Image 1 (cartoon, rainbow, N blue to C red):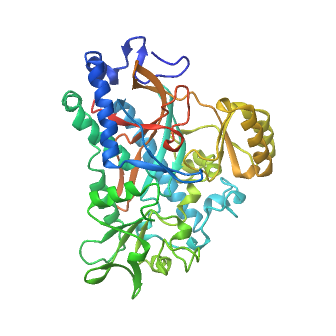
Image 2: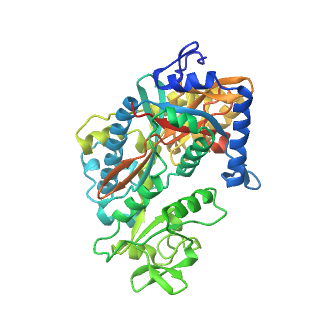
Image 3: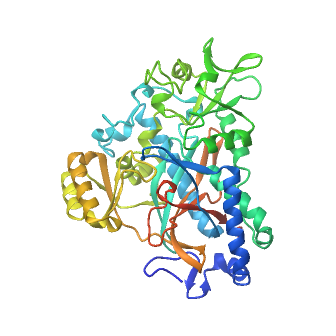
Length: 474
């Protein structure tokens, strides 16, 4: 059942499941395939009626698509999760400490652990944040750490997402869909709960409010609006947290406080969970032409009168060239070796690395340092000669804009197809909440799956789908 050299998370060997899948395998082998096909169609209809779609850009017009959902869960044992969660917590602590250091004393640069040129002039660095202390010292209130697996005990961090990680609504809808369609599975399996995420998010955000707030802090979620690709998630989270979903035109600065329009006038906001990019937050401090943000918002933030989650300027931690220094960053701030390892990475800004990458372009994965969503990347083994040569020209023109990594043998998990179970490659995005009161990690996260046979690209924008992720209490 496994796909050659790839580690299959369900199958230990032909027709023998690995321990986390034993109970599920026993269940699915006794199920009528026709019933499962009907359930798969039912799930697709639920997603369509709920409006769980996303926008694909890069064409003449944005195209709205349904995200494929597969009914075979991705199952992780409690033992596996224990190690993963320790590594995730360690990494998030280090990222937050790194951001504080970069915007203050820059000790890691003075120590030579990260080159000054990696920070100076980096387009993700926000000069306006220099010397600014976020309320409670938290920069990364919500973080998504993208993980891949290559073996029984081999997990790697593929990317860090500390700006505005998305996808948590799909994690929650996937679980809700599975619970409604297959309640018998949850009766026989001890699967850890994820449905309390919105309540934990609201609690974590409230804990991050500026000090001295009388009564309970007021939290709101700032969205760019209905045409944003993640608008479904914005409205979903606001509704499930019980907070107001606002746009820039609903807000204004009144007497040094950020306030939102209500039927009774303007009421103060203490914490703004913003899903608007840094440069659009405040036309007085950033892009003057922005209509998505609030004039004077950054001045209120700088005064300590409102919390912005995540803090502006966190994108420097998402930089894929900075990513290559993460083992050093973790050790520098925690005093410990990184529990979760990086994927080997070549920084194309280095002439020797660039030469290696150009010589081996057809065998590597090359990414933009500030890219996301699977855009602007080359998967060498899956690319045509024409695409490789076109990418070679871009790489030579702007080498510092790219990093390269080996093509990993990503683990597979079966999906349910018309002809039965078939392996497909997956990754995992666990979601982490951070406040001055501590760190909360949702057990599991969002499993993204490449729906096409042999494909290593799991992004929904590139045709990938999602699965429910189970962490067992074992």
